[in-house]
Each structure stands twice: as C-alpha cells, then as structure tokens.
Length: 332
Image 1 (tube, one colour):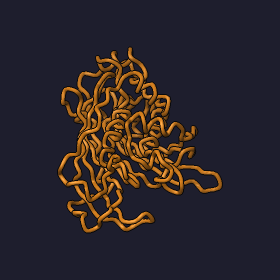
Image 2 (cartoon, helix red, strand yellow; image 1 turned 120 degrees about the vertical axis):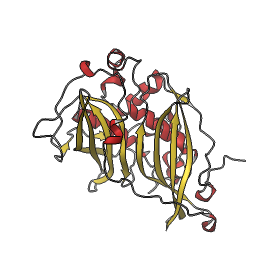
Image 3 (cartoon, helix red, strand yellow; image 1 turned 120 degrees about the horizontal axis):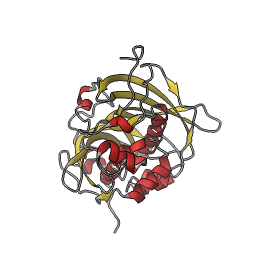
Image 4 (cartoon, one colour; image 1 turned 135 degrees about the horizontal axis):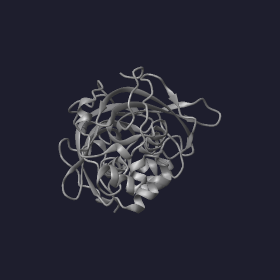
C-alpha cells in the first residue's frame, strides 16, 4: 500500500479536499525562511519596529504566509507537472509571529490540455482560503495547476480557468490596509517614476530549494524527485522565485510596510536549482494612502544558465503598502 496521489479527474469540482496539517509560524520557521530569501522587509526583521508600527508582535513576512498557504494547497497537486499562475491573491489580515495557519482547497474548474511528453493532462483551477486558529480568513487566492490525467473521458470539464490577470484596480487593495498602524518609525522614500524599469544589480542563485519545499510542507513530487521534474532535473517551486523577487523589491523600495496581495503571478518557464536569477522592477500604478502609498509593481525574473541565453521565468505583480510617496513627476 502507498500514499495515493490524485490525478486531475479525481478532483471533484466544488468539493473541498482534506486539509494539510496546520502550521504555527514560529521564530524557527521565520528564521529558516529568511535564510533562504534574504528578504529585507523591515517589520518582519525587527520586533521593536513591528510593535511601534503595528502595535502587535513581530509581523510575519506576508510572503511566508502565502508560501505556507501554497504548500498546504499541494494536497491537490502532488502529481503537478507545473503551476501556471496565481491570481486574485488577497491578504485580508496581517499576522504576528505565533499565528497558526490552515488552508482549505476547493477545485473550481477543469479543462483538458494538449497532451505532453508524459501523456494526457488537464488545467485545474484551485481556490484556496487560509484561516488562523480563530477561524479568521487570512488569505484568499486562486492557482492554475497542470495535472496528469489517467482517464481522459473521466475529466469533467466545467467552468472557466481564465488567464493570469485582468485589469489592474488598486481600489480593492486599499480596503485591505491594516487599521491603526503608524508609519512614523519607517523610512520615508520616493517612489520611482511609473513605467521606468529598474534593474536590480544584485543577482540571486537558487539555493536551498529543498529546504523551502520541506519548510512549507509542499508535497509536489516534481520539486523533490528529478525523475518527476523536467529535463531530468527537479523543478524549483515557483514560490521560491517569488520569495527572491520580493527580496529584490525590498531593495528597490526599502520603505515597504507590507504586501497586500498579488494582482497576478505568471510562471513563464521552468526554474531549476542553481539558476542565477536577475530582476527588473517597474512601478505600474500608485495611489496615496495614509502616510504613504499603495503601489503595484511588476517584477520580471530571468534565469541565466551556462551556455544559454537568459530565460524569463516569472512575471509577478504584487500590490504593496509603502511609506514612500510620489513626486509631481512620478505621480500616476
């Protein structure tokens, strides 16, 4: 007897899957995550600053909150071939250290895809809702996964899987701003001019891929077994690249208070261990809000591999609350 890994046709639309173990985000988990990403967001790094700004214990990095939620969502995707995108990611409640997270996964739509080298497969849209130990909704989002099909006739094609993103609207994100936070203790900055690409001079190698997978209880076999990856290699979990991209963003905008959500996150190509990543950031849109701004950035990541041209692997649009403001020239 072995643990069964679901095929696409075994996911019932509208029926929640059994949940993965709840995870308490303690200092050990945050320390390991910091070692993997090097994220310089100030509040998760400093307990005194978190208390000064938020009035609560040290803020958990919002990227780590989502990494845990994504890992918990792999109860549906142990057999995943690739994750195609995340969208409509909302962090409804910022959380302090010590919070326990549990994620409910509901298949929302399915569509047969073209057969690949490994056989039949389907695109499955999954909806995730993450709650804390008090049943407060912490995060809500969707992901589109490419999952193998064993019996093509058994796939119930239903609903629309859609695309990675729609029209950007900052209004829903402004409603997610935490109440009562005081940004006086944070570094005040000036936002870059919208539409101007900024290249981060610091590149990042992908290392500790297995540590992040295990840390977040990510059960996708493609991230653990080269035989189930691509081109004879383990696939790097896409959220690993997002974590490094957020670290790059905090270097571009050191005044980020927190992340409110992801407008979209499109994985454009496979990522492998030891890829060297470079990041280009562009401010898309901003609106002044409470001692700072709500801002949407587009971050593109490219992978450099020996003997090959750079490959764009990620297009990610987070929406952040930053203590930075706009100049007259830089207003959108």
